[in-house]
View 1 (cartoon, helix red, strand yellow):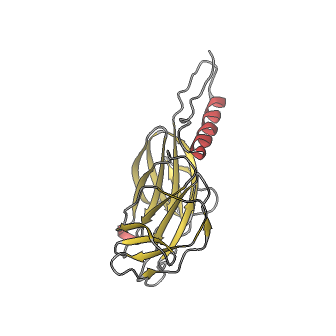
View 2: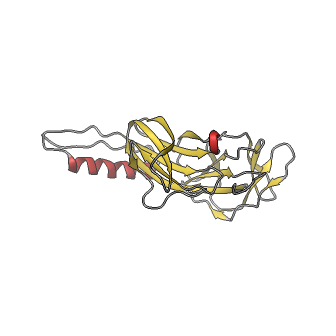
Length: 236
């Protein structure tokens, strides 16, 4: 019987497609000659947005996803393709394999997701977002997510200029917005007052056809070892 493996649809983002092909190839090699696996891939990006000094390891069904180094605050596991289906998603602190939070998640075929570890202590939680990477063309694509637990509604703006994406409360995410591919310096502002929160983000060049997630992280009023408010861009 001829062996084969299905890849993710070509209409999706090239990163997702390429990773899916890699997964399909791996499963292809592991199958016997009598099998014809129907491989459906799902891309998952993982970010530690919990505003503490703790570092975390991330597991799907007890398979460690982040490699040797635990994830610090604002650390991320780059997009990785997993076989679609239901998983136990678990975080542990770096020095212990015991779960600090475990939840059931479901990854649908041909879809991309971002999973954020948010808040802290007894409010530690997940935020799982479906990433729509279907847009193509001559523009770059930006979205904004407010992951600062004590922040009011926030705007993402160009430094000293217009608001690009507005009015995002805690845990709210925008859709990807088309922007011209060029250099940008972003800043995050309080929606009600227009006051800039934290420092302006470092200059970044947005490339044609690429996707970027701008996040508000940390606490406006940190105490002890809490992480202070900041913004960060996560490119695909």
